[in-house]
Image (cartoon, rainbow, N blue to C red; front, side, top):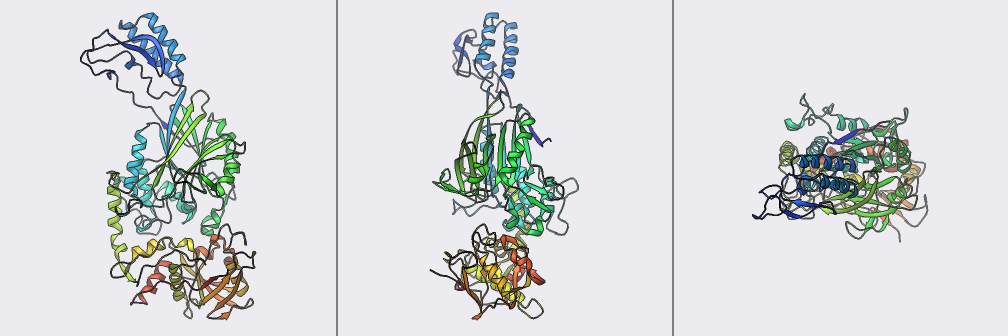
Length: 640
């Protein structure tokens, strides 16, 4: 089995003839100490060779990166031979230099820089400069990446997933093609797929990789000429998507390559990319039909022998799964979450883990299955941070001998200029999206927040559920008596401006997934199961997800009770929901497919498709021309 490879050809030679002393007193033949290779003194005088103060030492380039010691020794042999022929070295001095080249250790260590990030989510635009901690935008992000690249020509830029998906309008309107084009311009190497790369299904991931316009959307292929392919269509990613633990169920073949390799002067580093095993529970099941998502640790451990068989000893994991920790962006106090168990089970051959998914920033040491500490990083979200990582490789064993890492901020201030290679791309898509984004679709009376109260209910969740009910409660158009919205699908607050006008861009930012409404029939008992599934450990739920509910539906819950015993007093307009009665329920297509673990919805019958969620929201705003008020947040009661 072979892996896709990216080759670093060579580092540029340091300028020959650079002066060790900028003094006009340089006299050819005079000495300036001894020639040194690294910190090793050769006992050969470092003679000045020209009036511009060049010295013998300058010719040997021991400070540059060498892929192995043999390369450096061969270089010293060639240069010293030429200097001896030119009468600038004696044969005895040349022998001393060759012995010193071997003894110095120059070329036995190689430093490689990795630049990591995660959960970019198509955030191309910067926040207002009045918000220095806000999203810096891709142009400032690119500048910071370029600064880190410049520190070491031996580098790789890698992403731990969710580069796209759940994106703002300027990227999402164009199916995230702008973000792929921006990353092409920045020059990244690998992206481990995350759950949001699957938002539009496996076929769309392959289109993101290989290019071609979207089959139906007129907003596809709108890039600048230099970003399109030879036939004027979306060109796809010039970097490799990795998905080691995503397999076609029928064949066992991976959807995308699992491992990418980058060659640093003959020293190969393998990057294993994976998404979280639980991806099918948080994306639309129809989008991942026919795919199997394998355990993360088991997947990479099984790949280790194959990687080593290719002579590769340094193995990096890029994984879209994570945790959380206190102590700031480089803290690791109380680290918890799925990443801990995954790392605890990793083969000792794994040298570094770059993680994501939780949108947290941390810099940890977590023990592997042998009890050895493994460096684990995560760089927050939206391009606000980068993980600056230095690997030291032993060029003799090809293995990593040390790693240092630091999460660095990408501030949204004029201290970081916007990269001139990215600003035209962002401006282009801003112009392309300006007309649809600025279209006024309604009015609100105040800002409407997605922040939940103690019961898990948000004002914006109430309003969205009401809009979905209003779109489907008429006879023949669904006959719905309730609507429920997944909280993870509400991606932003609805802001209030001076006149309360809401634009399509505002609405799209809140609900960027383009889900359609589905009305289906559930029994009262199934509704009870649906609401019980909101809590961790009940019917396979992996985290608490309180569904947002429409007007008229009320219930209470006792969080401390057990599975199927938490929810009580379910009623519609005060009338108790009877277990044996049947009700028309509206959800979005993501939930209707069993998304977020609400698998009982897959059993709903008499399905009727409806409007796209943003269209339903627009219609609801237009039906209330005086303005829609924030939801009351009084429909769900959490019992003490």
